[in-house]
Length: 461
Ligand SMILES: *Cc1c(COP(=O)(O)O)cnc(C)c1O
Image (cartoon, rainbow, N blue to C red; front, top):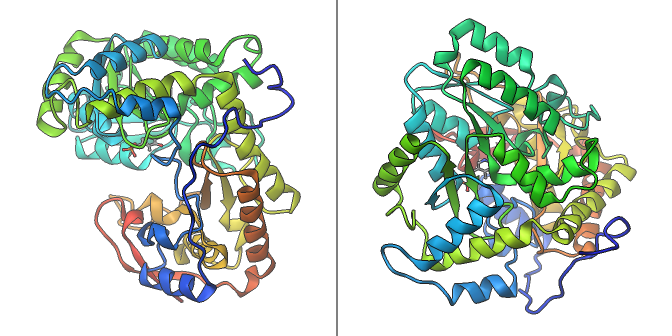
């Protein structure tokens, strides 16, 4: 254990191999973003200098994880690596049953199809794009029950991921508990800026759900990061380990979906877990249809081995100190420069408040999308829109949802970039901020039906 954890976030590793980056000119980047329809998701990786598009599947694996790849048991059935993974997940997350999937949305698909019936309402502490879509495709309707503070980028509330039990109760009173198949509880809520829930809130939620016989299904994607914040901010947890807090969270829930591409330090992978025999049997059966046999779920044996090792590394104090420390380093630099960002600084990304950065651009002219394109042009820094484009249209009115949060996400991959890279990013943001008045919005010229943010195309106004 790193005894200096309260003083420095210095990386608990050294570099064994490097990946060379390509530098581009402003003209090349202008051409690249035009070709990509001003959508950073459509730009090519080779045109990117610092890639903050996502922390999903972009982690650097350790020497031990790479060694694990060589231990891949590529048998169709009963791979040794599946049993390693199962044992690791049972040990650290504590659920009884594990079904591997190719990534998080594979697990969401299984869970939604199994638990949701037509017309059900699924409450959650803010939506996530793929999570909500799978709920809708299964005939459910997502209902946001996160605390109001989560929708206010300037609120310093330490647990913006908390569930508002009054909102949940209002829903249960309205439709009846039997129309609420489960509550979807996300750790370190991505769309709110990587904001944690507290253990006190989870305890209250557990008591409420027990009374009404509603399961709690955890989106465990960034729950190790959530555990870190509980340790740091919640009374009574300062002396507990991240590992123990993670387990305490999972023990209060009934199952989870997991995108292992985040916390678990792998490039691909996910899983579904539960404690209920019947739900497990159904998931084991359904996974065969959509992912692969229940002992590989769309993954190679080596992927499962790397995931098992990644989980063991992810729960260490020194890894988490460096992870959170690096994100905070960038966040504080931007705050000191007067850049409007979501507060408090979350775990996996810095979210720029595009409404305040570009107040002259109407939300239907997509300020966050515009800012993401500008950052790419400025310095080859690739970021992602999390605002009006990501939120999509209301299925009822067909209008843009115009969410309260209109954000650009600067997502930090785990163990990939240095402090000097973070300095370059901060400089680029400040340079764009200086000339923000010159920036005009975008109009959408192509809109796909599902998850439009991935493939939509834009033109400058
Ligand atoms: C990434 C993510 C997912 C979906 O996982 P994929 O591995 O991308 O399919 C679900 N929930 C949250 C909170 C995520 O961040």
